[in-house]
Length: 103
Image (cartoon, rainbow, N blue to C red):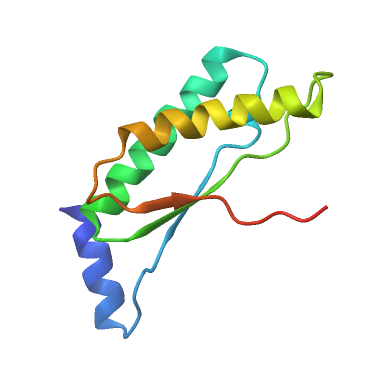
């Protein structure tokens, strides 16, 4: 596949792709359910790409929801998205996580 060719080219240059980054802007915490689902679907696609490339990690960035909801409500939205992602991942799939964000 095209993805494997990219990885092979990197190895030919003495490099290895260790992870993919998946940024869903503010989508995991967005107030609109359709936007949250679009971001979940995009992340699932990135997980499939990583698996096809034999890349073991997909980093995700949830962003910051830009509405007036409470912080806890926004975190609940993000948690619901991650719950859906984690339920859909096969045991052989890449690890998925979000880097620690400091404020």
